[in-house]
Image 1 (tube, helix red, strand yellow):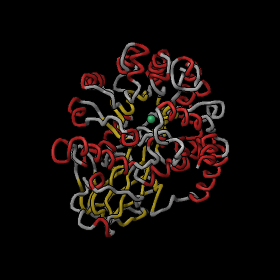
Image 2 (image 1 turned 30 degrees about the vertical axis):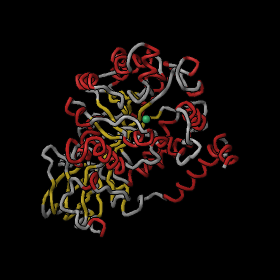
Image 3 (image 1 turned 60 degrees about the vertical axis):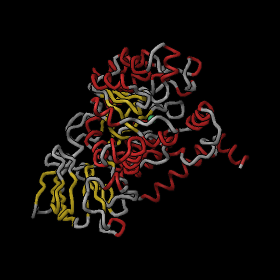
Length: 466
Ligand SMILES: [Zn+2]
């Protein structure tokens, strides 16, 4: 079994239940597991890694993303001035309909690379785009990508079952029947879902959003997930509530409650329209919220009152969200954005969470949200998922006395020094071991150009207008 011995780590921020920070410590990893933390450790046959200038943190857990959107970044056509929401949506969906399974694969590699370089070791992706072009392959292609990059991957099988003609905002070409959706959920669960300790692959059933699905889809999704022992996820309270009230006379959460799509095995993305009365509903059911700060900035939408939500008992984790409302996949940036947003809302000097509290949302809470007890903090017996930053460089001088708070408070924006997933080094000193990053980047750029840029009318119009 492969052994890694990290020597003289300047500080280990464990995020464990005692919130320990261990100074000048060694850590031994054997196979997928952290087996020992302490001073003066030795291990025959281990690779010794000197960490005198490094802080070590538990791997970050991303609880909401849409990998495929990595190839619709940096489009000025999509975020033009004076657009209505419907115009914006039409532009985005125009582009989405061009996506094929190669775009899914290379965009997933791009997102995963960004995640790994910025300390993320476990990624959940909400893949809801299914058309004739993608077929039912997206999750298979994402798992192929995750296997290459070495990231721990939770795939959400999303999908829409209500088209524009039936009162949603989703083109028919991007909709499936409930039966088709459920059959593919069952297929990917049987094929990939591994509930065991140190599992690298899990599946969640994740119909896209209450407004874009029929009620039966949510009812049957909840039934199938519980029958097969997987979790449930959706977008909820993310801007659709008024339309839900108009269509069915009730708010999204009450609608979800009626369908059975609520409970400790369910987590929702955004939750920004959640009212104080709904805090108690979520807390009572044990349904958590994946907070995605970047889209709040982009859309200038409601900011979560995290202290009030946590006080009510709601579990809150962090997500990057997809690139059409973020542009990037950095969880380190997400940690900093979440902190800054809370200081803007509640002031760093009054009711704002501590920077370290935000880090724990991205580690401990993220693990709980995905139903994992083997990741999220550093301790013997836990999975060897962590990252290290080199703090021996000049920009950190004068800030090293408090490793717990440094990530959210200072912000660490560049790539980390090393990322380890399940006991394997997946990123080290600017390199993905065994991967030709530049070749993959060139292939990805080519696929993006061929499939999206050359065929999509938004690009053609951009060329004409600018
Ligand atoms: Zn989303």
